[in-house]
Length: 297
Ligand code: NAD
Image (cartoon, rainbow, N blue to C red):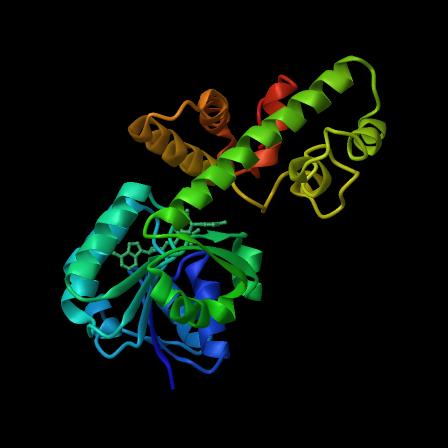
């Protein structure tokens, strides 16, 4: 039986580890939170006392941690000194490209195979096993990465070498953040011009304004019943998470010398909305800011 060490059992990792157990794999799980560990036990995982214990006999190590510093620390201090060299190491956290490449280099220098494999899709997709994975790894390792990820995935795509998965993730989410603001500005203007929101949706969704933010995730309540706008912008993809990804994109752009003026403006607007108390709302609630309203409590 494949032995998976799963580190980081939060909103995303909890569901992902459960799907590995459901697929019949032996999952040794660790998190700093005792409550998360208990939940993992209930989902068929075996709680470990430490990262070191979780990884020591693993065929594959999967990490789902908050940010770059956590990933750097957990790999340098716990995973690399304790996992068998044969273990395939996969970090699914969303982190900066530089940290992903640094951890990959450390791992490779010590004889490990490593992949950065951030995900698209929220907690519902993590629970359903239907996340999309963007993978940065050596080409020779991709088949093994894909096979390990399979119980958690609806699509796994190799973006390129180490760091390319993280690059794909932040570029994709920069498109998403910018396009959502564009759609929200259009609804705010339509409203001021006396144009009915539903009618505008009907027209724009069949015209050149059509995009995912409009037709799959419409920020105006009504036209897309599954969108968070119909439930007070609760659930979905939190503004604070979008802000994290836009910051990563801006840091990467500054280091790479890329011009991303709309990405920078989007970061500023989400930061303002976050400061006004909208951080926990779905990111499409930025419509409220553009309509001149404070985020609803
Ligand atoms: P979370 O805060 O709910 O979970 C992170 C978990 O890591 C926590 O349970 C925490 O206790 C644990 N942790 C932190 N340091 C640790 C350590 N040293 N050892 C063991 N466990 C440790 O976050 P999340 O929502 O699950 O997100 C995880 C990652 O996935 C982030 O990088 C996030 O950007 C990314 N992501 C999240 C979503 C989403 O919708 N929530 C979507 C896509 C990607």
